[in-house]
Image (cartoon, rainbow, N blue to C red; front, side):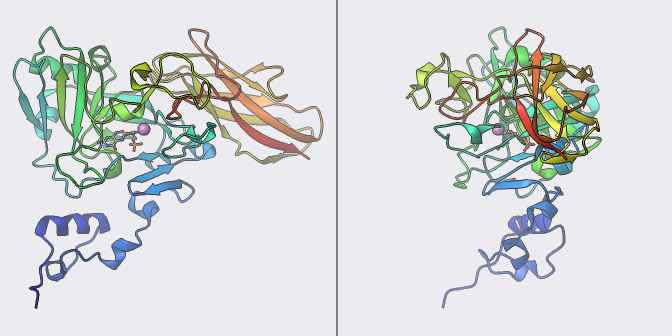
Length: 406
Ligand SMILES: Nc1nc2c(c(=O)[nH]1)N[C@H]1C(S)=C(S)[C@@H](COP(=O)(O)O)O[C@H]1N2
Ligand SMILES: [Mo]
């Protein structure tokens, strides 16, 4: 008879931490056995999300918001989308967590404990827009593979941490530094410990911006586990894939970082516009940097009913990657004519901007409200789908809601 083997201490701790309660006889559980409570885990309770959030995938976990859930000026955790490329780290110990800075372009490697980071450097808080490069993918035709995000893979929370530039200055960089790449504690789906699910980065100029943070808090609390506890890189305005969660290392590179999902067609678009469905070779693909100008109507929810003669107050947010949004407009006649909306200035650079307008309708009937943002360079959102690309990135088409006046 085969000898019964038991779960290891560390995987038991992992199971308990996900359940949020001690498994009393856990040490007696056969290895490989999945506790029942774990088999039908409820992602909304597990990640403290609102039940109106939409689950796109459970291995890895991916969840998006709906437009009307994003009405808050600062996105609370319950409405923040989740994008994972791999498996969330099972055991996280704040006391032993370290961040190592290495790579060709540091003078010497250096390792910091969480305590070092929190005590040696000044803290900053910024509200930062994080949008997945694939947000809006579901609309492309021919369709692109990957999570079929509609409009909900965007958030704008407050992030508190230290400036990456202060850390890199403390480490000491060589003159040939051109890029940084992050390393993290999540596991590849294959569970191969030598494979990283994702290891992306940004050019050194972006790394050195004031707002690029090594964050340990979100909205004034420790970062929720699924969003990168205990430490996360935050690069606002760029594809959120550059904001590494569960951060354990940063490599300072003397060339463009070549980590997982930096090459091929990952987070890249054709350098020149292509026809829908066209084959594009890897050498014709360019890395996405700043995200394009975009906006969302977050109030009312699409499908709203309005009594004839009443004005409708609409709200939303607009953002433009590295740029500020200069103008916000809406149309009730399918884009034939546009009216200006009120647009707030951002709390800080790289934060989204709220807009509002009071809309009146000439008579009973079906209408659509379309919203269009223009960035400080004069670039407007396209009314319908922008340039097709093989991976379905950067869909910044105007957001539209339906309204019935009765
Ligand atoms: N370590 C790690 N960091 C990561 C990812 C990941 O899978 N692992 N996903 C990236 C991608 S593609 C996105 S869009 C954002 C999503 O951040 P969120 O889940 O906190 O909303 O995290 C980025 N950082
Ligand atoms: Mo992403």
